[in-house]
Amino acid sequence: MTTAQPTVPDGMRADVELAQRGRSEMQFLQAMRAGLRPVQARLRTRLEEGSALSSGTEDIARLRAEVDEELAQDADPGLIGAALRWNRSVLTPRAIDAFDERAEDLTPKATAPAAGDITDRGDEAVPRYWRYEFHGTTGGWDGHEHMGFIHHELVYRYLLVPSFPGDIFGQRAAVARLAPRQDYADICDLGCGTGQFTMKLAQTYPEARITGVDLSTSELRYAQRRAAEAGLEWDLHRAPAEDTGLPSEGFDLVASFILLHEMPPHAIRGVFAEALRLLRPGGDLVFSDVAPYRLRSPYQAWYDDWDAENGHEPWWRTAATIDLAEVAREAGFTDVRQEALGKESYPWVTLARKPEQERE
Image 1 (cartoon, rainbow, N blue to C red):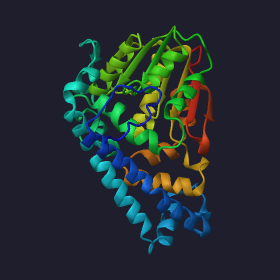
Image 2 (cartoon, helix red, strand yellow):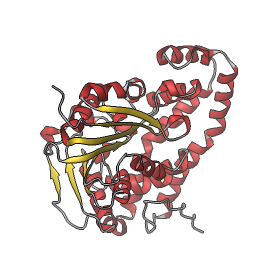
Image 3 (spheres, rainbow, N blue to C red):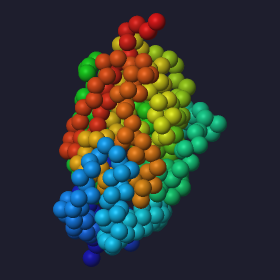
Image 4 (cartoon, rainbow, N blue to C red):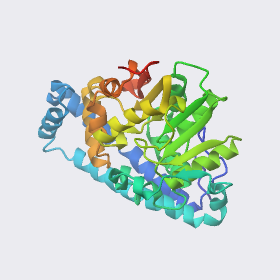
């Protein structure tokens, strides 16, 4: 008897089949996360019935300290934290093993149809923060030759899509549609990864030339594959989002989805400055990222921060507390506004425009 394949979400391949062991291991990791939900719900009830959340979300350090004090004798946080850390530590190795077990069949599906079409600024342009293993991804986003395929088709399929609320791909489409114009000719997606958001930009603005920028070679290669299968041609570049090396004023829309929380504060400011340089006068910026703590419920703000600490997210707190609207204004943008598209203010989108004339 074999285990049924999970439902294939929009934007993922329907012909990815794992060996039974690999499929079972990935489904076990997903089931383990699902099994934590009653414990998490019990913890939430205890906190919301107590007083630790009454201080609100303005001072996240204070909120964390008060919750820690209230939960000092509670075993649930330790249980949840240990389970999630273990889950994350084995997820990438298990996904890689599952791929390698079917490598003969899966490698052709993971390989771009043409090589050498990705511009590479070289390792000297790679910032130090990129070496961090985000999300506990063993080896980082280039820890395997086909990590782009593994990340998109296995990790997303078996863990992220079933575990996280909302429509992951639908959220990207909604952010793409939020840009204020319909006639963009040249669009740059910063931190494009495997092209999830890039694909939504291409579908929303089918006449535009699309450029994707990312630091992961393997993610870019799979983005290249996905574009080719969709009959699209994207200009893909391996470079940091804050220093792309692309020509100035080459785009009328610069966008990103869920990139900024993976960067330290100086790099976040650098990305806004680079976006301004890349845009033509009158061009638009659309950056989506994690919801600010100030707009979350006290429990959700506490859990976001606690989970980031336990989930290899060193700059989540920065992204959730920094005033991105002010960062945009400091960079030189005008018409800055922000909008929440979903429950608990996620995705949180910053929109802005490059002035038609440079400020004197």
